[in-house]
Image (cartoon, rainbow, N blue to C red; front, top):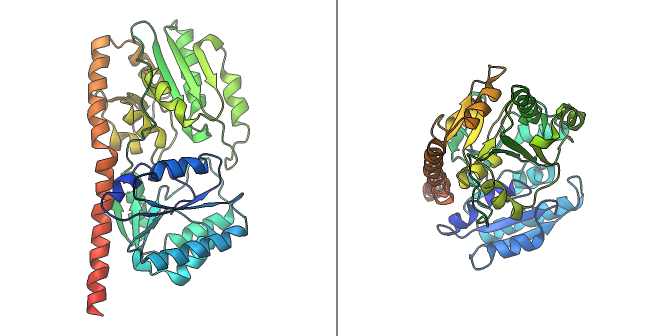
Length: 373
C-alpha cells in the first residue's frame, strides 16, 4: 500500500507479482505520477490496482479511504500487508482491524536527515508505527543497524533496487573532450549542492575548465531548517559558463538521456540513509562521486565503480572531481564495466527475491501458528 515511496516500490512490485497475487493500493496525490501512469504500469501484469486520489495529507477524506482499504485487505484475505505508510488515519484503522502478524512495515529513514524539521503529529505516528507492527523491512545496512539498536523487533534488510526510467536515445559523449558531471534529484541542504558549487569554483580558480556540471532538480525546503538554501546556492555560482542549471522538477522521461549524457554522477551529501538517485545512477551504469560513509560505502567500491572521498577532508570533493578530470579513456571504460556488474547485483529481480525470502518466512510462521490453534 503506497501513499508515497512510489519510486521505491514500483521497482519490485512487478517482480513480486511473479511469486504472489499482488493487490496494490495506491493513494495518489498527483504531484509526481498521474493516475494514468499507474493504470499503464499494471496493464497485462495481473496486479490488481486499487487507486484512490486525495488533495492534501490532512484531507478528512483519507479517513474514509483508509477504512475502505482496510476492508478490502480483509476481504481479499491478504497474507502480507506491506507499506511504508505512517499516516494517522491508516495507523488508526490498521490497528483496529489488521493482525500485527500480517503487517510488514517498510522503513526508509529510522532517523531523519540532519536538516529536516518534522511535524509533531508525524513524529508521534512514526513512533507508534515503529512499535506496534511485528515485522519490519529496511533498505540499507546503516538504517538497519540504527533500528536494531533502538527496537527489539524482527527486521530484514532487502536493499533498494536499481531504478529504470527507460532506455536513452543518445550515446555517451567522449570523456577526453570534456568531462561532464551531473547532480540530479530534489535539492535539499543535506545533499550538499552548495559544497559541489564551492568545489567547482575552486577548481576553476586553479585553472581547470575542461568540464561542465549539470544541476537538475527542484529546491525542496518545506521541511528544511534552512529556508534560504536556494539563495545560498545561487549566490555561490560565479563562473556561469561551467554550469548547466535546471532548477525544476525533472520528468521521468528526461532521465535516461540525462544519465547517458554525463560521465559522473556527483553526490556531495552531508548525510545519507539510502538514495533513489544513487540507484538510478546504478541502473544507467553511471560512475558515482560521493563521500565515504553510509549507503555509499555499503553499495559502491572506490576505484571500481566510484570515486569515494574522505568525508572529513574539506577538499575531499574537490580532489575527487580532479581525479575524474585526469582520468584517461581506458580507466573510465574499466569503471563503466564495473558499474555494469553493480547494476546486475541490484537488479529488480534480485531485490524482489530479498522481499520474497522475508515474506515467505512470515507466511510460514503465521500458517504454523494457525495450525496450532
